[in-house]
Image (tube, rainbow, N blue to C red):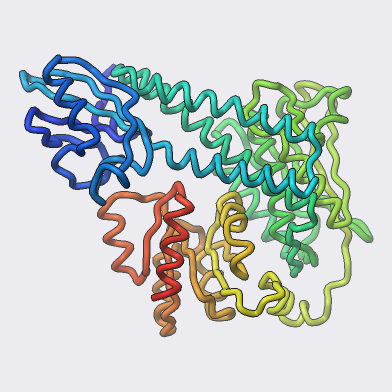
Length: 483
């Protein structure tokens, strides 16, 4: 099998450079994204020794803030390893550099959330002990495989280790988000912003997103209970629960069918997600909504998601449950919500009044932040970061962003580039056409220099790439607000 080494190196979690005897950088993969030409002082001694002794080095602590200029290949905090090699008769030292700053930020977020939970006595000691255990496993994997990654030059092993690190990093992010959500539920600080929900459009959107996550072996279906159904509810919270149920169905239905829909009775609506997947034995069904319970202890995930769903639905006056005929026979997760009369003012405007759409705060001085983001988890991260500092307005796509920018006149906009219906480029163009000078920060997974140049020419004030560095984002927001 022929392996494209260039593509492989570009996909690595680490920055990889090659240095010649003059200490000039003759190669760097896309991860570095800089035009630096000479190796930093932090690596100079080790690189020179590697040339002299034709040897290797590992676990060298590096930091761009301490050791290098602004265009450095070094991360804010990281570790480097190097190996002497000869390629076509040319002596080189290859250096791989692991950035540990994002992991530190996520760990700090998680520690802060746990401290807050403990301080408010919202989580008992058993819960904290379980969370500590759940956190320790991915951290051990990240630390262990990061060291192995630095110590090997085998490309296939590097790719394997990178995949393991990435998987466990995502698990830590998920843990942090779940802890924040659980803390908010238990302390009564979770926001429930009520307005009219078009149930049919909502269900179609949910199943369309679910279908994009499945393989060709799994079919996703949508069943609508009425021709036209409107519900006065908290759409973000209903979406959070439905997305969790659909994600679980996808996870446990490798091949088969997933059907999501709703039925209506006189005084309540019942949503459901039915799959033909693994199923749940009768004796285990009573545990599925308990904290940290998982059907298989080797499964990825935190074991908190369904418990959060239960808390959300019960706070909205509904019930949630599961039905399954046993292992291998599929499952049906369902939840009910009461059907209440839609307030006249909400019905006449098609939504709740403006003062209810924007989260309320006792201080009129809080700036308004419009967040255009179609991914629920990413929005929850922003909400966790900025909920105490801004009045937040959420747009699920570019079209909504244009409408809400006109309606609420925000002080700042975080604009995702890749969104359904209308992307961030077009939304920003239309906002600028109104004469608005509101600062708009582009948030995107694209990270190459050419992408940044294109974005900055399209009316944006700043640019932040994913995965989000919280400190970098806060710095950009502060700079935009004080321009």
